[in-house]
Length: 83
Image (spheres, rainbow, N blue to C red):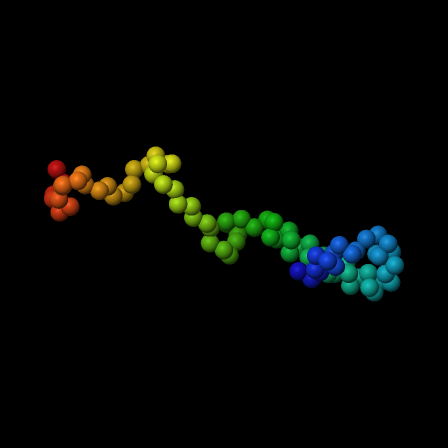
């Protein structure tokens, strides 16, 4: 960002009207760059972001899905052939 939050809050109609042409152009360039950066961030999604998507871990109780591996019943051998 080119302008801090404090600087941006200081800009109002009176301030803009008081600027000469060169200062107004310089401010316009910085505002445009900040606006483009903000829009780029706003429009980022999982498909166009350089950050990996967040992964959420859900327990089986919530999703109701069957885990890939199930523990054998108590007392059963883990090495026994499937029946």
